[in-house]
Image (tube, one colour):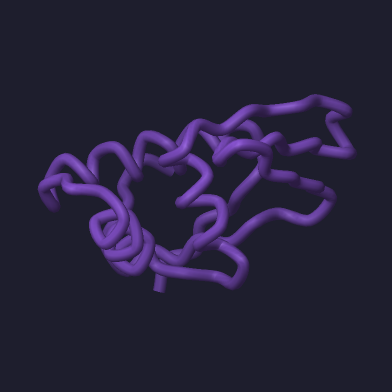
Length: 95
């Protein structure tokens, strides 16, 4: 899905284990038996998904943490989420 809106709901998929070390997160997708690394911004996005959230809520979290414009944040968060979705780490639901 590439048509994401601010109200698109995002949630973590099952079968992922994650740990954070020095501000960066490592995720093991147990089904795929692959590890994925997230930088600091990716870690904020992942941490915000402890429960399902909208893209708007995730962007609010990122802009509260980093000095970034709303447009830049939205683009970067969507890029991160699309990549996570392609790796089956998150799923999207439109309402």
